[in-house]
Image (tube, rainbow, N blue to C red; front, top):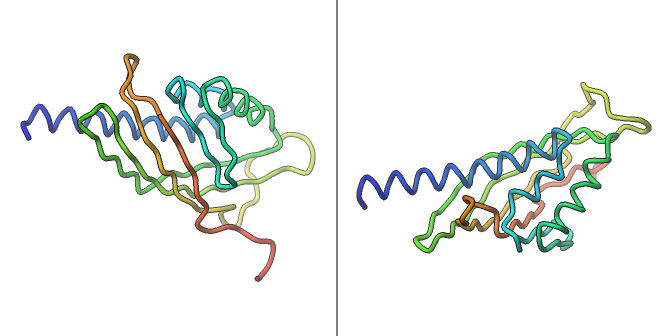
Length: 153
């Protein structure tokens, strides 16, 4: 691998990682509808419960509803990001998510929100696609590894 190839790989990895960071920041910062812009035109989103959306319009509509949920305060903490760039203009990625979340009983959530531990911890599985406008998420699937419960099980 040449130095130029290595630099191209690092730039692609960083672009894909930035998509993941922007995904979390948009949701947590009240502009969740912008998540759709991170996806390829026919991108796919799949939740831990098997629910899914295909295409930017469906993804935007769902995240517009999330944007309106002002009683919720959340932080999506993404870590252990791993991106593998393929030679065909695609990349795969995994990351861990730790989500802290508080839902106010009425009215908008007001910081600081109470949280003694995460709501859940899980894994993102992603594919990325290099498009004419830059890297985009082709597919995102989330799986829960740990889930907060209300009491001992």
